[in-house]
Length: 265
Image (cartoon, rainbow, N blue to C red):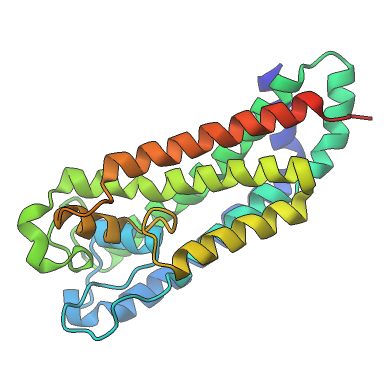
């Protein structure tokens, strides 16, 4: 039954999925253009695959130890999360009407909620998959290091190169999509309790505040996490990913409880 509801939701929201693909592609194209403009002094105009992924995931400029600016709010990250929040959020309450009819016909509330969560996670995966494809294209067109994952890329600080390996860099890149999944599930749980607009506002406000207060985990800043980890700081990649998974699980459980006691009529 979960699969049937999920297929129905995908079929119903085909225009929304097409809009997500189009807007995500446009966002990534603009972000990569800004990225290329920012790296002229670092990579001679060539876009490295790993570097582009870090920029698209966290929206962070190349690390410059000589810069007087210690931190800048990751505008790209905030923009990406707002896009994901719009793609995920405005179908929840509308689907409650269809969900009510489906549940009356025999589908369990658990099946309906699992389908909604799978759809939200699928949207996040789709958006980030487009980012990976766009990063690969930018790397290819600028003759960058397509398959060579350079662990000393300027995002992580050249002075920390010996403390960073490619495996750690790739693992840290998972922080951004994991954080986005947690935000998406939390948004859906809040939407069930207080409406779609409230869920959208709560999630956008939360990630904007976490970015402003420079919390690497909550802002999905994998570059900052890696630098912190290399210096022996409190933010370690495995624990950050575990925290995101735990937050996703809590949001799923809360949403399931809300569905269990929600009046569907």
